[in-house]
Amino acid sequence: MKAGAFVQLRSRDTHTVLTPRWGGIGMWISMSITFLIVSHLPLVSKSFGREATGIFLAGTFIMILGALDDMYDLDSITKFAGQAVAGGILLLHGVQILWLPINGIYTLPPNIGQVLTIIFVMVVINAINFVDGLDGLATGIVAICATAFFGFSYLLAVINGLNRAGAPSLITAIIVGICIGFLPHNYHPARIFMGDSGAMFLGLLLSSAAITLTGQIDANAITTQGTNTTLLPLLLPFTILAIPLIDLGMAIVRRVRAGRSPFAADKEHLHHKLLSMGNSHRRTSAILYSWTAMFAFPTVAAAFAPLWVSLGIGVLIFIFSIALIRKSLVNRNVGANVRSK
Image 1: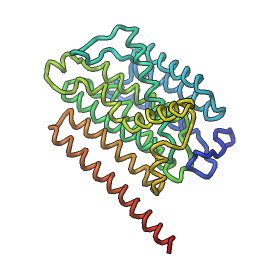
Image 2 (image 1 turned 45 degrees about the horizontal axis):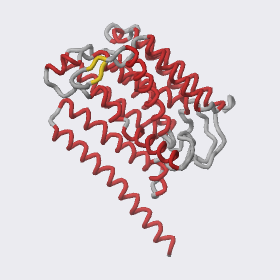
Image 3 (image 1 turned 90 degrees about the vertical axis):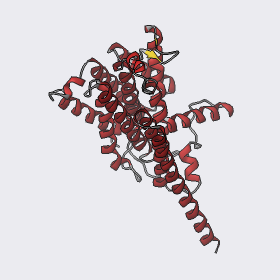
Image 4 (image 1 turned 60 degrees about the horizontal axis):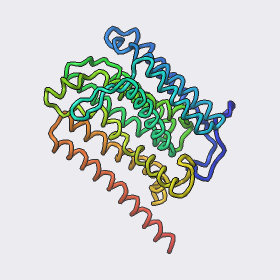
């Protein structure tokens, strides 16, 4: 608060008290301490190589950019340019999309892979940033996403004889720890926000973990073995980030159709609509958590278990989310009846 890392209350905000935003700095410190510890552990230190160094440097850069935005409210062009630079830092350290599952396995020309890597990083960063509009919402969603991704990367390493202490497992474990540690301070009513310093930082870590996973996999070997996991390393980030990506896409379409900038803020995100239905802050977060889990965990299960198991998990989570919504509607109707009397 003393540094000025907060914004005055706006019409689209769901909080009513001025709240500091520099949560991303605490997240970065947590990552740095973890990297320092990991580098001295006999087994896990194997994951701290060139890629992890690049992720650390890119994460540091994007956190500083976000911290400046939290203070000075940078324009979109500056932030996009900074995100592209962060993607460039990843490329310099070997974090790059190398292949796509097109008619089998298509090895990308280096320049195409570099462009796709930067685009992918920017999309994930902005998807996380867009969903960060409610106390604890982005923190919980990213924790669920990272948990699913950790499970996938670790099980894939075990089944296919890959390095279990690889960068994907390390980075996703760090993300889970960061989010679980931050959530008690960020859950409603929040005492601190992650701000752009945290949202962009988490988006970069999540996208980096996905890219490093594709780099560790011999896709041709997996295809030869006849498993159904070849496509998942690239599909999984989009699946587990379905809710943020859907919200991002809907916001862009909505604003363009209204003749506004795609990045002009409004109060029509998914969490705003759920709040308008009578849900509390916490229930709205719980509903969106469940929707995220409904996409994330069945996708991971589909890679290692029969399809019916995956579908069963998805149906159970969906039923749970419907029960949450029905309860909120019942509570709203009861409240309306009491007020009318």
